[in-house]
Length: 157
Image (tube, rainbow, N blue to C red; front, side, top):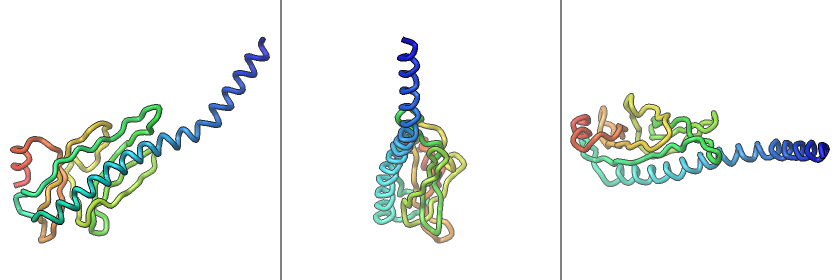
């Protein structure tokens, strides 16, 4: 009976050890796929904003969006941070899953952040406002946390 128990424990340990790397990869892929899907939608929406609206000094052209950072679970590695930035004159988003950074181009103009949106590192849903405006004669998208319509308008004026 003891031999069967020892053999069962040894087999289970081998199975868990063999499946751990595959599980880790699947968890990371789930988190990255979630972010890629959301950022593809965001990129399409921001591109439409840039192509169809005019940049005004008071920031009338805007989009309110929700971005969900997946939490770490048994089936999902979770996203530890998301950042928006300008790289080579275009707006990009960079997110981190298990210490690996991934970057995706969002829109063909620069994105500028505030202190509150420079780095999103809490899992869950974040409501953000992307405002098309001008800075030094250049069209840019500014990212702010969503407050309310009245408060958002005051902060961009």
